[in-house]
Length: 338
Image (tube, rainbow, N blue to C red; front, side, top):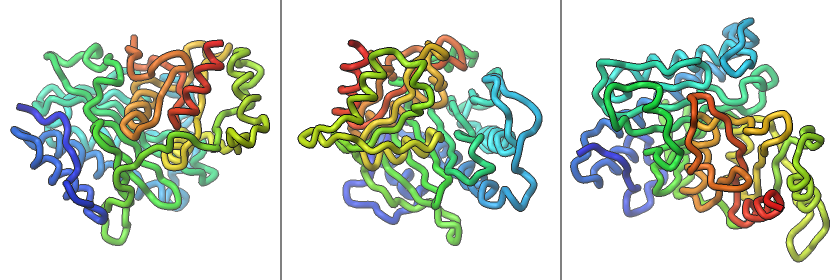
């Protein structure tokens, strides 16, 4: 029997290291092989290595553009390449990961000799256009079961509800790794002195309603009438409903999502006339974030339906993403649907 999920210890584990927390969870899963546990710890190691490079980027000549563009048509930053290579190098070592699909690569990287039974989807460095100006950036990941052999591109094309785990790392004023297996969302802060992630945000719950909204209003001319009506709604005055909301927009998904997860409110990247299918990648950004928010009691919508029910057609399928407090996402859907 392979391990598919774990639950946190019965009592508070605040201050536990990431490795200890995951290990204690594994002991509660009958028949656990340790492959899933090891894979989560490998992701933690990759996050540490990337955090270290991010922290000294200005001193190590790794700032700036490589001169290339990725499959998305976006400029590739030097740290994009470093982060992508780090994930591949770390996850191929123990044989628990059978393949990686990355936002930076046209095709998945497969490990034919691996036997661990898991696949990883990853945006190695989200928000990389903000690197040179010291705005918070991050890593987003998801873990899928490898249900069939041989592993092919089709093995990755599953709806987000089939993730075994998902999480993100935010490289900000501190480095925080947020992770869930679908049963509880937990945050771990990296202590550079000790070289460990310690549990700092136990059982994160997204507030049911907030007073913040996060959206790129520079796209307003391309929005549907419903989205424009929602935007005016959150800015209009209604003391009883807690409006107007305050706007907070960083432009780095990890940063905006992290704030929304902890403080409530809504983050919206809706479809528009320029990106009718949505802008964010389903496997690397929208799907993992949706999995996290639902596990924390929040909501994740395309504007008309559940993100976790959307099936990717390709490795780089895109999707609208509206995440946040249940009440606020429901209000967006009401306006979006007309």
